Amino acid sequence: MENGDLDPQQAIKKRNEELESLLAACALNDRKAFARLYRMTSAKLYGVVLRILIRDDLAQDCLQDAYVKIWNNAASYRAYMAAPLTWMSTIARNQALDLLRKRKREVMDRDDKSVPEQVDGAPLPPDSLSRSDDGRRLEECLGELKDQQRQVLVLAYFKGLTHDELASHTDTPLGTVKTWIRRGLNQLRRCLENDA
Amino acid sequence: MMPKDEKLDSNTLAGEYVLGTLEGEEREDFKRQLQNDIRLQEEVDAWELRFAPMLESIDPVAPPASVWEGVESRLTPVRESHLDESSATSVWDSLGFWRNLGMMATTLVVALGIVLMSGQPGSEMNSVLVVMNDQDRTGWVVAARPNHDLVKVSAVEPTQLPSGKVCQLWMEDQNGNLHAVGVLPHDGSQELALPMMPKAKSAFKVSVEEMEDMPTDKPKGDIVFEGKLTEI
Image (tube, rainbow over all chains, first blue to last red; front, side, top):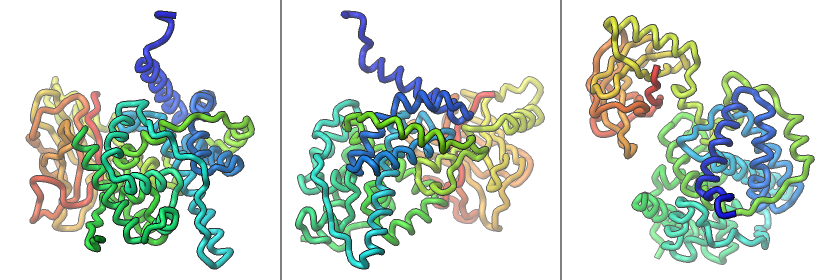
């Protein structure tokens, strides 16, 4: 086994290269490549949408939408901008948050009153993001924020909570929550830029 | 203390857009703005990338087979334009802006023709940047030679601008900073000096500026095009 395992960095690089070429093939209408892309990435993306949407049925619909979008937009993927899985995971997250927003609007329209803020009890991802250099950097910079600032940023990112919902969830005045977010964003950006 | 004057610049708005806390009308306004403002799109892209490592830490969960069946039944042949119109406001789908990279063969042929016609026999021009016009056709061709700090810019079908406006070409350095190159000509061709030696894939941008008030340090007007040199 000493030499049997690929160095993890090498393995990631190899996987990314394969995903990049699969996306390029999808842009040329290659459904076989898309099927392989799906096999290689769907568990990751399902994890992402499930984390945000919690409900299996919603997450499955959302995952379908996300892959249809990936197929339709494969040609606009640019390897120098983001790793393939980053690009795809971001599409999946955005799709899930769009679905959440749509559902909230529907409930609002139906009830004609503000939707009760619901924050599910599902745990946030573990504190450790350090699976990559970027992850470690982000973790360090998030660590430099005040606890409350970090908490609202992470809650918003994963749960799609609005300002109002964040205020109610953290039992804090709306204005304060807004300030936390804006300052948190600015500080995070500065930290990440200085580090780069 | 709760400062009311917390600065709400476009970058913070872009961050809130990505985070998801930009809501309702503000979100819709921002999306509209995003469609036409490539600099704002870049800010959104940058925020997506800053936060993306958070998604890495999520454990994979195998979806049921029914999902793939559903996906497969919904696939339609990829369209020519590749862009999903309904979602053009999302950055991750608006990357079609970088058109020069997905240059079609025909465009490349046009570019080659221009370079061959305009160059002296045996011209060593071996990299081009095809700048698309507002109709998505070849507007200008920028021809470069690695390690020569002059480019030849030829107008093909330049974008028709209101009087007093010009298209200004910018070159990006390794740190992503832009340096002014010059004005794209309305017709004919022109040699422009570059602020630094071009590399195989040097990146350029084009902004629309006031002729009377052209910036020298960074673009003031909208960025309408960006692309990289392609070897031919």
